[in-house]
Image (tube, rainbow, N blue to C red; front, side):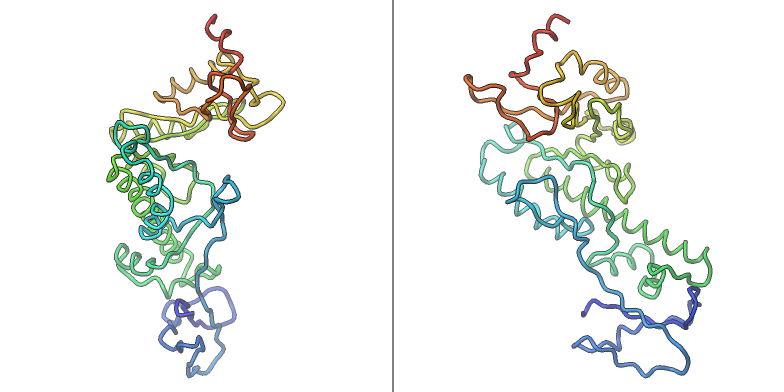
Length: 312
């Protein structure tokens, strides 16, 4: 409740004059009640707060499910890192770091919807845009302040701030954490509520992805563009992903069947495949062996089409 930001504006109607908006935050009592000597007339009181988006991390095993971390907060990413990657680094010890077995961490494609607030958003907005956003929050309810042009100017600033925080507090800080531990940062910077080139810049390996049977995704060319613009020599892609279907996955695609789409991806600028998926096969008496559930092309030594590819 202490984060609530009530404002008041003349009613009825969805167009509000800027000088008629009153920020009532100072009239909020510690118990959440509003103590305000209301001027004469009709008023609409808006109480604006924030809450988690409710999106969970997925796909994940049952024991690993939980809410997505706040993408606009470096502190939130620090907590996420400490609870996951840092534990892996410490467990592996001398096997983690540059040139070691564990040397790279990936942010996969963004698939968890929008986010428009964080605990420090008020301060970050003021620092970056030079004015207080709180009186303008009536616009997120569909109201127009002064005019559509003025309102769109604020909403542009709002979206610009969100994009900057994504790039700096999430993708940029992720790369800093990786590099501080001797790890490379691989990033798929697409389909999110941000600026993709800006979010791809801090990556050591910018990445796209492509699926078997679905053609080459636009993220592949985006990754190549990030590399060309920011001087990243290695361009990766989550490669040959396959959904379970009658035609693909489940050991149905041998290497030769994957060649055409792989060649096209090379032509679009990728120079490193990151196979989705390559599973460890520790047994010599088990077939077909380990999987990643139903997802991905089965590409490892148990792939029965290996001899066909060699003849090709």
